[in-house]
Amino acid sequence: MNPITVALVMVQVTMAYGARVYVNPAFVSRIYPTKEAAGGVNQLVVKGAKCVITMNDGKFMSVLEDCDFLRRKLEGRIR
Image (cartoon, rainbow, N blue to C red):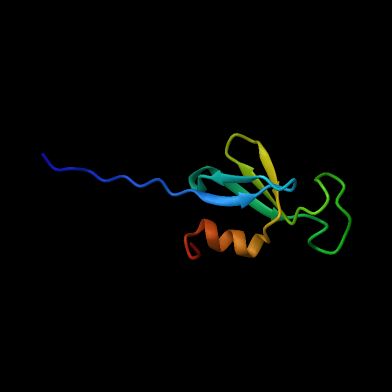
C-alpha cells in the first residue's frame, strides 16, 4: 500500500479589528481593494481595511493586508 501525503495550506490574514485568522486559498473567490485603499472613503467596510476577501459561500472579510501582497500570498509566492 502506498502512503498518500496531503497538505492543507492556510494563509494568515489580519481582520480590521486586529484578530488573525486563517483562510484556505481554495475557498477564496475574489479579492479587491477597498475604496479607502484606493484613496477614497469606505462606505461599506470598516475603517482601516485595505482589502476585501470574498469566499465561495458569499461571505466576506475586510482585512488590513494590501491586495497585491495578499494575492501573492494566496498564490503561494510568499510564505
